[in-house]
Length: 134
Image (cartoon, rainbow, N blue to C red; front, side):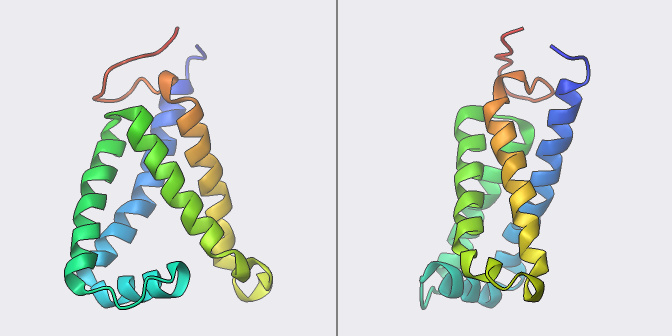
């Protein structure tokens, strides 16, 4: 295994975590905004604040398990699926790119999520079970 691969994967994981952490925090700090995001991008209209808090609570468990490297197959996979859904739900915004430049940041993060999932067995700097093939 390349010497710096585990450290590189740790930094990728921390970067993805930071984004998800603030998306999760938004559900608690500004649940109305989070409900509006669900309505606009996922067609989930009229989510109650309680549901937003429930989603945020589940997401907090997920992202902290992810950042600690626990249950990598599941947590890395769910993070990848959630971010893919978020990226593709914004597809219409990519059609007018210069009005929505910030949305393009989703694509490199999606590739980071995919890289983490594909290389999860080499992500050794975790609190989870080390399954490194090397």
